[in-house]
Amino acid sequence: MEADELLLLVAGGDQKAFEQLYGLVSGPVFGLVRRVVRDAAQAEEVAQEVLLELWRSAPKFDPRRGSALSWVLTLAHRRAVDRVRSARAAGEREQREAMRAGAVPFDQVSEEVEAGLEREWVRRCLNRLTALQRQSVTLAYYDGYTYREVAERLRLPLGTVKTRMRDGLTRLRECLGGAV
Image (cartoon, rainbow, N blue to C red; front, side):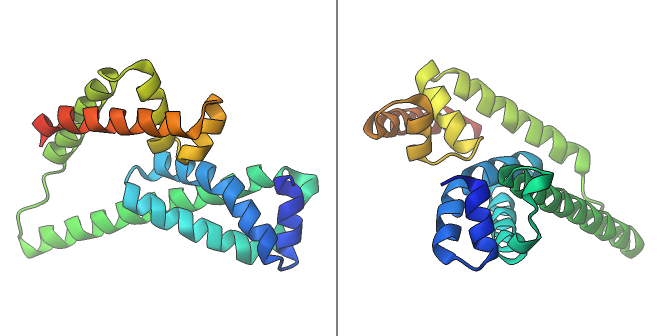
């Protein structure tokens, strides 16, 4: 069943349809939110909020205005941007309060430099993987696909994908061991 049909059933309170819809959209929702929020834990939280909001606001979906997936991803993007803005505002409030209190301000520049160096280290380690390992790891960890979805997307047996992932993650752990 297509996402549009499922969302219309969810609007009527159909829990089974929601389970199926969840399976279809949870990967893309997490991938989008992860790219916007950048923090994995925050992304998981925001994705969960989006899926809860999906259940609650399904009756608002209008198939004449676009596809269900577009609507869900719009919800996800808005919620992720809200989270980023909220975090930024909280940081700015904390920084203002620290300035008023005479505390040593948070060194944002060094934190940004450190984060940039960590990203570069991860990129270098990813480039040391085989192309097949890198493709599997990227689909799972950056795009938010499950192992099964990676296998379907690459048209490979699930066991092959799991082996690539295990070997790739082992090599990444070894490579990143020097970054800690």
